[in-house]
Amino acid sequence: MKAPVYSGRTDTGQVRPHNEDSFALAPELGVAIVADGMGAHAAGEVASQMAVDVGLAILRQTAGVPARDRLDTALQAAHGSILEKAGSSTRYQGMGTTVVATLIEGSTLTHAHVGDSRLYRFRRGQLEALTRDHSLQQEFVDQGHYSAEEAREKVARNILTRALGLESSLRVDIGSTALQSGDRYLLCSDGLYEMVNDAEIASWLARGLKGDACCEALVELANARGGRDNITVVLIDIP
Image (spheres, rainbow, N blue to C red):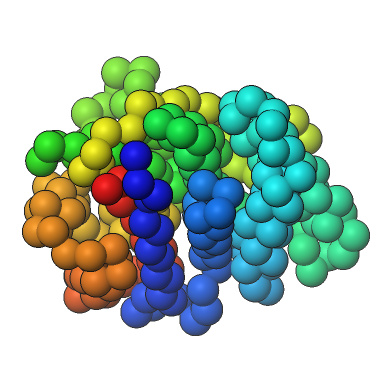
């Protein structure tokens, strides 16, 4: 299998004064990470950048360790660093971040996430979410109180049930999928999918645009729809 092709783009959007999203691409490691920070006084920017930097550093140091353990260790380390930083100053108090990370080894993509940043797989014209949001909205849907559409209307979208820095302990969701030629994997913050629905994302991924152009087009569409949040899009193409 040829080497995957990585692309990414982040944008402040049309409403927020600054960008609290961060992302990293490390093709030599087979790694992509997207984080969406939260916290006053721009502390969200600090939290998301720490998630990316600490996570990437741990993944660099753990070559040879099973992929699931590498990702869990990386996110746990980032979580610990964010908690420590948050306790060091009132400026950083209460900061946190979502994160979604992927690690490709051979013909397998392993993914880990906390919060509501997502990973999608686009395969043979079909778009599927490989992650499940850790949010109050999703909990109400899972418990059968509302349909997904009802939950979007009745439950605040930004209430997270899990995030790095939110509580002392952290549970990371980890999964894996076998790669197939032609797959496209999309990592994104909620600034994309809250503005652009899954059918529209699938439509753009199906057009055959190269990674950079496709990321750019999706960010532009989210901005055209109002860009109410920061927007980050990362695309991994499997030749």
